[in-house]
Length: 428
Image 1 (cartoon, one colour):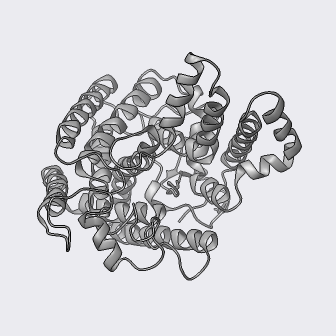
Image 2: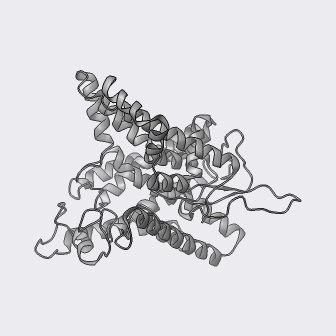
């Protein structure tokens, strides 16, 4: 019967010995695996000891590695390329203009109610974090004590949270920074989901998810908000926004509230726990690969249906991470994982996912470089801004930006590939 290791379909040239959980960052941020050389007579040397954060620890299932990289791919430049393509197609006839509207709409956050592809990126990453928790912590428990597992969870959570503070401090200037940004949310989700995983069995985890989603709904629905009342989910009139305005210090993304704010972190933990369930399914030895795919796809479809129905009363809103949003995004994430698992792990067709695994392995590095320097600005310096302007003027509006984003994305992939081959990974 298969195990987590035997179920993995490694890429050509990818080390399969001693894969150690690493982490992730960014919007996810995003971590990846640390690869260690097999034991030998040579002295043990650390290739790079600085940091790759724990939350996105790298499981030994190629489909999970690839899905992490797929998520990060859109953050480091593919989203900008898609927006530039939409701009190029705009006004070019009925069909192309329609395509432009569809593409542009999917790469912008919905203002309030509803869901676009862009709204799926962060919950997908948190979902993958939950999947990775199962593989990383189970491995620690097999080789060390439960106390060690708790200590590593705490250490990695604190370090990733600190990296978030550093990231926003550099970007926004000290001391008025976001205390609950993307990296901070990932750190908190990883912390609480890991603690629940370490201390509860499957029935207890199921109860925890139900309690989180129903409890959040009850708070948002029945707790009165001063000068507003109860049961309001409107943009400027809801409990989550009021709590952020009253109690969240530091800079907030939207002035007096934050989409990664205090109360909405609670259902985000539920997103991570849904990923834990998917990880338990993938790691289970009693199902064949195609059966695991079936369960992922079936559970994903069921969560989407339930989330859409719940959304009729408790709207699907990313900015306050409603329970219906958790279910719909959890379902979509399960569908994506099921598809990746079937193609990569079950059918063994993994070569197409090479760049995603490279990106996923160095996610925190790429996230920081893209956030602090930017791959697209680097690309513009390489190809010269005048070329971009020429393409915008003589080919189509957006063509120069598309070239810059594509070149920037190629730079990111090349860097990820270099780090992967040299086995250089930040590790927390």
